[in-house]
Structure formats: structure tokens, C-alpha cells
Image 1 (tube, protein in one colour):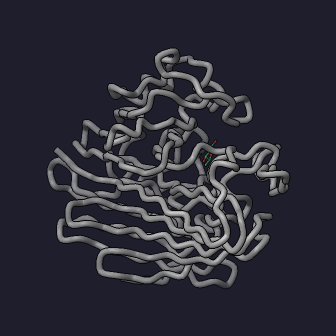
Image 2 (tube, protein in one colour):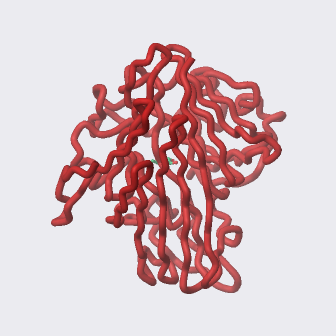
Image 3 (cartoon, helix red, strand yellow):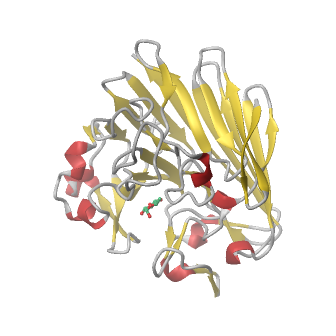
Length: 336
Ligand code: G6D
């Protein structure tokens, strides 16, 4: 189903919805491929939205929290906005203090994607011209959201450049399994198959990999409540405003890399990915406005599970001319 929902700077904005036979549905915009709804049953069969979204759709034009969007051409922060590879250092926008964040002021988050609707999937395509946001090469991007009959949302990422260029995509949906943002995510349990993470400096720039064995606050291997982390008084949580905003390296011997659980609703989300890392962001910067559906916005309104290559390592996500970038992340929803 396609529905006109807004006009941003003269461009028509549409919401596309797909649903399966189990009462689950997903809605996304052609603007930023932003996921605005994933409606999932709870343990009693009550279907509610488990992602946070703006009450007024017009807020997706500026989207200060990057709600639901595909992040790119690169994800996370790049130090001093310098894309360093081989013998060059390409300056891109410093849109986050002295650093580059999430592909720049425009990025893929504020692009109008061509959308193809299928019964169980939405296919988004966008051609980013050479030099857009300062990045070299013309790149054709394709992203698909596929909804299965067993309540899985699969995100497939595909990109092909006409010259060597960095590409490191993710999705910035904030999950809140309470449904319709009835509560914040502090009582959600997070389990990560991750033996190590990147410590951040005061600009939230990744600086070094450390073992969770030496930093137990960030040892999520057995699962722990988010509230037990944010109140921990741990220097790394203090740096990011009292929470998590860190890249975690994932154990590639474990299939289900991430499990998020809301004990109250009984909903669980498990994540599989072929990316080697995930930035977990607990919504520390979410403020009172713009208002979200389910009432005012507030800190910890939702939690992002941004699967990706570790940020600020440009050499590791260079894609050659004619090469194809392919990644897949699968979000599986259950309730018990
Ligand atoms: C803040 O540091 C965080 C980012 O990780 C997040 O993606 C953004 O807010 C929305 O800048």
C-alpha cells in the first residue's frame, strides 16, 4: 500500500506498507527509506508499533535523531571529516563538531529513494552522483526490506560505484519493544555476542578496542538490563551522556548476534548479520522535542542496533569501481 503523507521542499513523500499473514506490518517512507512502523504482536497477541516515530510526519524532513533511516554513504563518525585511503585524504563535511557523522548533512538519510513495492518487500533505489556530500564516485544504492511469514524483517544492502569509494551502510531504527513507546527501554534486556568494543574519546570517536572481560559494564554476553548499564557511573557511559553509543565487535562463531527482550510485553528481537560490528545507541541524546508517537520524546525512548563495519576505518570499507557492496541484517521478532 502506498499513501501520500507529506511534501518536503516540493518533493512528494509517500509511506509504503507491507504486511504478512500473521498480523505483522512494516511501513517506510521514500525519504531516507525511513522505517516509521514495525507492528508486532505481544505475548497476548496485541499488535503494536515497536519502533519510535515522530508524531508529526513533517519532522522526518530534518529528522534530528535519524529515526528509521538508511545511514550512508558511511555510518558513524569519521575523524576531522577526512576520508583517508591510499595516498589521499578527502575532506567531507564536519557536521558533528570537528567530525563527519552519518554521511553528512544530507547523506542517504535525506535522499528521495525510488520505491518498488512487492507483496512481501519494499525495494529502495537511489543513485548518488559523483561528489555528493563530498564523496568520490557515482554510486547506485539498493536497499530492500523483506517481511517474512515468520515475522522476520530482512534488510539487504547493495551498492556499486563507478570509482573506488568508501561505503559502510546501516539502518538507524530505534526499537522499543514495549509497543507504542509505552515505556522507555531501560527495562529491556540486551544480550550481545561481543567479546570487545571500541572505547570512545570525548568527541565519541572510536579510539581503541578493549575486551569486555576488562570492562564488565559492557559485558553483554549473558544479557543485562539497559538500566544497569546507564546508571553504572562508568566513564565510557558518562562520555556519551549516560548510556551506550559504542561499536561492539561481534563474535562470528555465533549466529544470533544480538537479542533484545522486553519482559513486560514478552516481545523479543534477535539479530543476525554479516557485518562484523554493531553500534548500540541507547537514545541518550533524545530530547523532549520533536514529539514522538506515544507521548513526548525522552532519553532512552528507543535503542538502535546499527550493524556495520567499525566506523572511522575508511580503508576497511573501500569498494572498487565495478565491485558490489553487499550486506544483510535479519531482525526476527517473537513474543512469549
Ligand atoms: C548522537 O552519538 C549519537 C550518534 O551515535 C547517533 O547516531 C545520533 O545521535 C542520532 O550523535
